[in-house]
Image 1 (cartoon, one colour):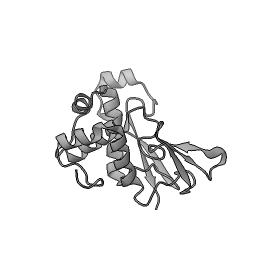
Image 2 (tube, one colour):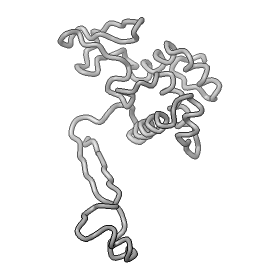
Image 3 (cartoon, one colour):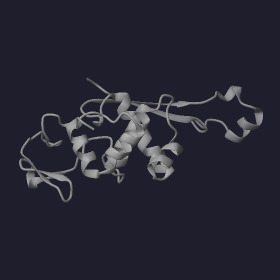
Image 4 (spheres, one colour):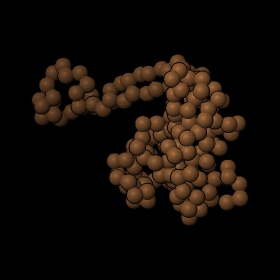
Length: 179
């Protein structure tokens, strides 16, 4: 590709481009830090890069803390490589009608469980418009969703018992970053 910041247009281009881990890292760094690498903890620009381990060392943090590209993003704490993450992002973002975790696992060569995890994180990032994690003041709320006891069959009521609260209902939780 001509421009390093240009996103691949076809699956073949994406596969070839993100196959090399160093190229994938350069692309991701250019997308996340267009003005130069900054420490995700303190925001310092005084960082040095260790190419062998693909990590940066912050000169201003106590004990010269190290960080990788994934720190502070939805990719943090994931053993899945950056090359697979970027190809997964490309597949999910370019699929007109969505993509299943089974299709993603076959395309990336990872387990279905890992593909489901990866897809959930990618969808979260696409929904919020950034790969950064939630920070600052965050609202949280939860509820139970399910049918009413009075609408249940007699046998279901008997199995469930009286006063069981939310047993048998789905728990739903929502998070919102205030800004």
